[in-house]
Image (cartoon, rainbow, N blue to C red; front, top):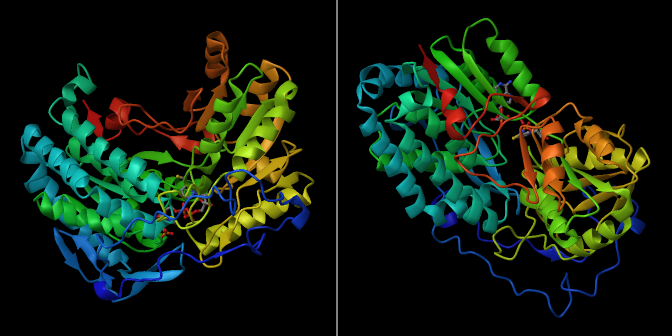
Length: 519
Ligand code: TAP
């Protein structure tokens, strides 16, 4: 659709209905009565503060970005990307085929051999700095596009996703001419062409986590974004053009999972990086087994957020809320299991319910919104199915009585208590705004329960005692452990998991190692 036809019905309509059918499989009695505090319809409710979408021009159709140019897909087919907050189509996206993947890899291979590997590392750094600056200059455009395409609140895309993406390019620009310090005593070498497949929960940020270290280490890239969130990757193609990055150094191929598989299994692709579900991670690992490629997998999680009785309770409540409701809980490292010490459980849960009643759910473009739209109808259904399983297995569900828009995919924030460790909601990644509470009595029991998961990506500890933080953190089988905070990210810090959460690290010097082979 032409830019002047960009959907205009911006703000999702709201309803006071207590329960939308998919969002609330639980009996109506589990929904709390409306709070008299700052929530919902009280006289203290915030006035709407919508971000303007004028800055963004969404085109009717987008092609593939191959060899520095926009190209039509070889099969001539397109898919549609939707605004999850309104269910309206945003644009037609090229459905890349294996033949398109082949063309992109050829371009990346040529760019690696003829241009990128021949550049002085200092020159490569300049491109990365330039990309970082352009991302900062165009940050509002990126934030609005990301929010329209993914459903995440504008406050988060504006204050977290885009600044962190720019920071990643800035940080890795600094490494480009200092690679020998990352692998002391050895000679750092790039792999060549790297194949990268990213998910829909942090579309631009995951692109930055993948592309910035790859380019800094001297590789060229073929990247496939998720089908439901391709727009910021395609806007990034424009940034590459603006930065005058040599043709073929970055190639972006939109398309289905099978096209992603063609990229990662191609023999010319020497290193693969994937972020997404554990099942697809396993398929990719099997698909490239025996080919000698480097592989990093950043997969799912089921993090424990552990609250001890001596914790500062109000701060811990904030941390738990941030841990599970940030980005609608569609976060691999989300604190989706609350482990709370039995002696404070009742009081803590009462404060948590109060706080949850204040959360504002609705139009992601409103600067006051805390919880935006779920990324897709399929994800809504998957969350609904798991929540229904929690009720069926005997856990107790509670949801605040907040208004939900009548259109769009919105899920009410959900708290489960009386959860057994065997329940599916305690074991499986829900990837939605759903928190499962389990109590414990002793430190040893907390550690045992926290580690009782197939995953091992992240964890949180809330206590006033420094010695307890050290004791528990060193016993937790999780790649990242936050103490008295949660969901803090920094380009200089490595991130990654144990067990079914994958292997390899992204971020920091460790994240650079994955893109280098050293002799
Ligand atoms: P995935 O299927 O894992 O999608 C992630 C990326 O992999 C997308 O770009 C996807 O493309 C691509 N892909 C799918 N099948 C592929 C294959 N066989 N070979 C190569 N690439 C392939 O995740 P999803 O279906 O969007 O979500 C399912 C569940 O995964 C969620 O409910 C959540 O639990 C989990 N998930 C976890 C994460 C993180 S960060 N840990 C992120 C997303 C989802 P298409 O988009 O075209 O399918």
